[in-house]
Structures are given as structure tokens and as C-alpha cells.
Amino acid sequence: MPRAAAIYARISQDREANLLGVTRQIDDCTADAARRGWPVAEVYVDDDVSAYSGKHRPAYRRMLEDIRDSRIDAVVVWNLDRLHRHPKELEEFFEVCATAGVSQLASVSGDVDLSTGEGQFYARIQGAVARKESDDKSRRAKRKHLELAQAGRWSGSARAFGYDAALRVVPEEAAVIREMAGRLLSGESLRTLVKDLQTRQVPTVRGRPWCMQTLRNILKRPALAGFRSLRGEVVTRGVWEPILSEEESARVRALLADPSRRLTRPARTYPLKGFLYCGVCGMKLVSRPNHGQRTYVCGAGNGLRGCGGVSIVGEPLEEFVTDAVLFRLDTPALAEALSRTDSPRDRSADLLSSLRADEAQLEELARAYARKQISLSEWLIARKEIEGRLAAQRDRLQRTDHQRTLRAVAGQGNALRRRWPELNLDQRRAVIDTLVDRLVVHPAQRHRRTRFDPDRVEPVWKV
Ligand SMILES: [Zn+2]
Image (tube, rainbow, N blue to C red; front, top):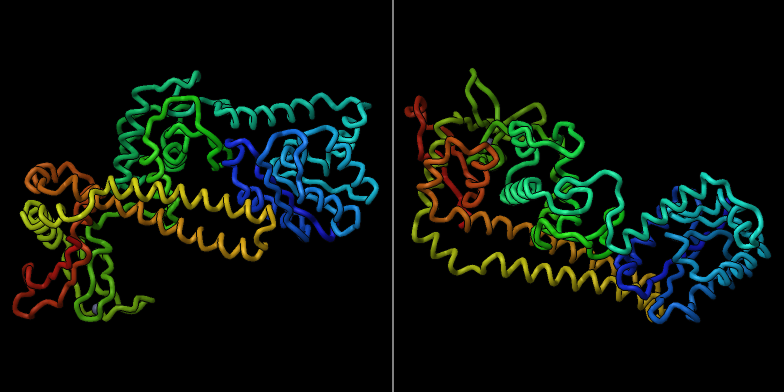
């Protein structure tokens, strides 16, 4: 077992491979080293900006020195093509390792894994023994995969929903993707969308029934916006026609990446769940069937921390709230409030460009570390800050979705009222959510207990 492993990462001069991200390379390598139980002694990063040949790589040379001096006894790289580009370099590397007694070289992508294929590797350098045909084949296949990725080509075996085998857009499937992305962004759940696809008997690629994981995987692929990705990371522009705009795709991915969206969440049957709060103690009301009626209560006991002082029957409350929301959508005050805010289109364009700027800055920072202009700890601190900013921007991008939905329904109160019976629960909730921040429910007056009392409900509006 090695005592001091090195991680080697290289920022490549070609733009495409560059997008693989040096941060990602290091993260993957760190995880790989941890899995093998190798303690990492140092991270070496080179900035390979200039031409391919005769390139000076200070960090690489430093690593070789450290191997020679036995300060390093194992090397982890993301991919072997990060380590060497010339057979000559490889030979030297091998010599140094052999002299120092270092035999452990691991690559995360596994297309060439020296820890098992070391003999083969040796053999190739010395031009001696032939490799096993099967190993060779699998290695070639994996490399082909990467090459295709880097050239912006498709490399999966099965075709992807939305495209035929020749990567031409399948119009019916593209329409389904656009519809699903749009509905997801306007607040519908994956569960509802899957149910709809099942009901409509939309065929999947493999002919199996739709499930949430299938739809999720389809919608979150950067390929829909024309990007080729490898293991979740954008590599380059694809050669095919996009189905979603870059912006839509980014919004869908931000939304699906939200850890609070769990796939296992049960379908909602209570349209106002999450909007209602107790007027006495301020806790969220919970839904509870009572004699076959939907009821919202301030839960007390059994781990619930409410006061138990409020209970309200669901149906008349839901009708009342729906009426209030639909009425408010058509008021001139709302139209005026909207005219004062920026259009979400402008805002998300800004957000997308600052997202890209921050991503570029992360790369720049890695370069500065590679050039030894900053220390590892400075790099990690700055990286953490930028990553925090990135997370906040993705969050804001998601919030522009709310503005979009609001703009789409503003002034449509009457039309929505007619369509209300056809809307599913998610769609109804999305409309309510455009305007309602919360609804505070006060306890019932004794003499009015028998019927619904609108005075008990105090809406807090978003707009
Ligand atoms: Zn309460």
C-alpha cells in the first residue's frame, strides 16, 4: 500500500478537453485515491497552454523529482492522456518509476489501468509481448468513447429519446421533451408528468413503461441543448441539433439538481399543503383526513410541535383560496406591479452569463495554482467562495421560473377559472404559488363553527 500518493492534473491547451475541468479531475482523483486507501501527499497541476510538443511542464517535472527522491510512491491521474502525450515521456516516466520502485499508477477513467495492466504497459513501451486480444478491445472501445466525446459525437449504443440513431431530431419526441421541460419549469412534478405520459401511452426508446428516473435522465441531459457531456460534465458542443435552448436546459438541470426534490415524495392530494400556517402558534398546518373529509390541522403531540388549536375543513377553504387567487390575477394592481419588475428573460440571461463567468474564473484560479502564483490553501479558499456564488446563482435562476409562471397567468384569472376543472393538482398549486406566500388560519369562532368562515383566513401575498 502506497504511503504518499501524488495526484496529477493538467489543464489541456485544447478548449474542449479544457471543459472537463481541472477541478473535476482533482475531485475524481481524490475520491479514487480515498477508495483505494492511498493517502494523498501532493496535488500537481500543470497549465498546458502552449503547443503540444516540447512543452515545459514544471509541476510534472517536480513530481518526477519527488518520485526520484522517494517522496511519492504512487500516482493518480484522471486519464493517462493527462500524464503524457509522447511515448518518449512515457518511457522516461517509466524509467524513473522503475528506479524508485514505484509501481502504482492509477487512472480514474480506467481506460488504461496500470495497477492491473502494468505488465502490458511495460510490454508496449519495450515493444515486446502482445497483449491479450480482449483487453485490447475493451481499452480501444473505452478510448473511442472518449474520443467521440471530445469530438462532440455521440457514443452510446442505444439511441436517445428525441433523436434517431443518426442523431436527427425525431419531431414527435422533441415535442414531448419541450412540453415536459416547460411543464416541469412551471411547477409540475415529475410524478404528474410521468403519469401523463403513461396515460397518453407515449412510447419510450426501449418500449418499457415510463418511470420518473427515465424522464429525469432524459430531461437533465446537456445533450438536449446540443452539448456533449461525459459523465455529467459538459465536454464540448455536439454535432446534433438542440431540442431545448441552452437557457431552458440550464434551468431544468438546476431544478432537477435541487436535493430537496426527492423522487420518493408521495403524490400530493391536498392542494394547499405547505401554504397554511396556524394563526395561534405559527406552525405549518398538516393535512389529516377527518370523517372522510380533507382537513388541515395544527398538529400537536406525536412529534408534531403545533398547539392543536386550529382545524379547518379543506374543500371550502380550497375553493375560497382559488377564487381569491383567480380574482387577484385580473386586478390592475397586479399588472402594474409586474410592469415594474424586470422581465425574467433579461434576468436569466444575466444570470447565465455570470454563471459562465464564475465557471471561467474557477478555471483561471486553477491555472494560477498551476503556475504557483497562489498556494493550495489559497486556491481552496477562493474556490469555495466561487462555488458558493455558483450555487446562489443557480438558485436565483430557479426563482426566475416563478416570475415566468406569474407572467404567463397574470390577467388570465377568468380563463383559468373555466379551465380549472381540467388542471391537475400540480398545475393548480403552481397557479396558487404565483401569488400566495402563505395563508394564516385563525381558530374558529364558537357560534360560526358549522360553516366556512372566510374571516378566519388571512392571505399573505407574494405580489
Ligand atoms: Zn397552532
